[in-house]
Amino acid sequence: MGIEELKNQIMEEANKKVEGMLKKSKEEAEKTLAETNKDLKKHEENSRLNAEKMIQTAERKELAAGEFEGKKSLLDKKKEIIDLVVDEAKKELQKQKTSQKKALLQKLLKQAKKEIKVKRVIVDIKDKSLIKEKGVKVTTETLSGGLIAETDDGKIIVDMSFDTLLQQAKEENLQELSEVLFHE
Image 1 (cartoon, rainbow, N blue to C red):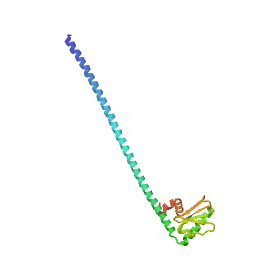
Image 2 (cartoon, rainbow, N blue to C red):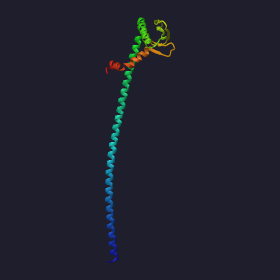
Image 3 (tube, one colour):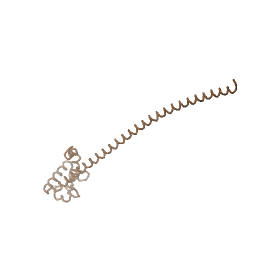
Image 4 (cartoon, one colour):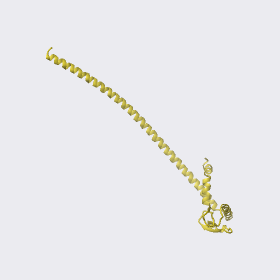
């Protein structure tokens, strides 16, 4: 065998090895590309699912926020209506005839005397002439009606003003008020 043949044989074997290595590299590259595409599709699907979950969560949050605002608005309106009813009750109490007012003030004073030793009574200026009680000093302030009773030293007070009595009645009977007004 001559040098030329040997050279050709070596070149041929080198070319075959190179072709084998290229073929193997190409197969590995295709395999890696296929795995990468598979991973990419899996990642895209996971991203799509996560995005859908995030959208659903955001929609639920938005819906819940809307429901909350609606309920809050309804509750505010109901509170306004209850306050209007209480204000109307106060106006009706203030419109009473003098004889009715006097009887009511006497009843409130009697109740206050059950709780404390009354020495001073505060009433609205329009109602001053309606209270005449021996041993009780009558003074005036701007009240919506009713009275405020105090002990001699002023340390103990029983507030029976219309504002306080109506507020207490509203708080104690809120459920019943709601049932009557809103059929709940």
